[in-house]
Amino acid sequence: MGTATRIIFDSTDFNMRILILNPPAEHTISEYPDSDGDSFIETEDFGYFPPLGALYVLSYLEKNSSGHDLFFKDCVAEQISQADLPGLINAIRPDVVGITSFTISLIDVCLAARAVRTAAPQVHLCLGGHHPIAFPFQAAALPEFDSIVVGEGEKAFTELVTALDTGGDITRIQGVYTAASIAIWKDRTHGDKRFLGSLAVPAAYIDDIDALPPHNLAYIRHIKYRSVVGISGDLATIISSRGCPYKCTFCDVPYKRYRHRSVEHVIAEIEACLDTGYQEFHFYDDLFNITDQKVIEFCDALNRRGLQFPWSFRGRVNKVNRESLVRARQAGCRLISFGVETGTDAGLQNLRKGTTTAKVREVFRWCREIGIKTLADFMIGLPFEKTENDVRKNIAYLIDLDPDYAQFAILCLYPNTAIFEQAVAAGLVSPEKWTQFAAKPTTAFQVDHWNQSFTTPQLVALQKWAYKKYYFRPAYILRSILNTKSPYEFKTKLRGVFKLL
Image (cartoon, rainbow, N blue to C red; front, side):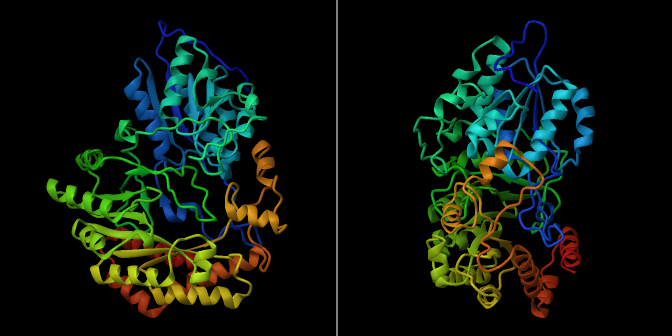
């Protein structure tokens, strides 16, 4: 396995070949398996979305360095298996490989790194993405990798490549660590509050995200990304901001400081996407509607440019007013995904949602009147749900809310969240469980849930019941059929019916 902290390439002899890799998803840890260990709802059931963080890293490298051959592979969307990786690596012959990661995908991340190392023994392997932010010490200790990037990787990875090319010291780069260099932080207190969990080591961070070039569509235009609630099988995803300042107890989004791009930069990226043939857009921000005014300013910019296309975003009901919704609909907004989560004011307060059931009802009513479709994200298995009747009452609230789409998740106890600490205090989960997995990933690992009142199989049974209860209502079925506008919508809805059956 790779253990080198520095590899020197002679750039006078050859161009460095850099590969950014989104690894396969063959061993992703199931969030809520049934009694047979199978997942009722798989990640791919929701569609495929590009790894925007990795693409931004590649585009920044492309703009701020020269003389390198750059490659990108999204193994998930392109259906590249672990078995395919040796052939891929032999074809590309990379000198540096950056692999993006989530903790629940860590097994595939390590398997992919081993395949890369076997095919290209001298390659420098760097680990980035969400996982090194959540577990920097364990990530740096993984024997598969030569270095890790903690935080936002655009500048850090570019400086890493430059250092490898020129013989510089990679351990002097902000956010870049090796197993040796990170050790000095184990007994120090850093606590970067810009990150969830007050990240314990200095991290790479981009204050001015307007300084970042948009991701280069040439790397992904051949891939058909899609959403289960979209209207086409060719979806463009854009972020207009980074971070979310809210502190919902269950959320593990790592960036807490909100930064937004200028409207001009966002519109320019949209126009570039339109020029390549995209016709449907989804804003993948952690929080798009940070203020009503931001939404209105964006709509004004679309109107000034004479742009009209279907778009959607993820938002919060407590940051919505009717005027912004009216303007959004006039400017082509088709759908908004709201985190509703639960059906009581006490429950919303417990989860720190910052809203009320009355506000939720008002916003969903506005959307229906204005003509914006809604998707309600809902959860079951919450700490305050003690009986099946509690769960069914909350589902009854959602049915009465009557959004166009609903997604039912089982609460997962993720590390670095308030609800995880509550579960530790209640004796429901070991405080070291995730750190142990991060240090030594194994397929035997299972995500914990709030199992004080229900077993996981019971929660999965309730999840299946909730989906069928919601989607198999005659009135809903009729409305859904009448509102189907494209062959893609028809196919995804039909696929969903078979999934539920």
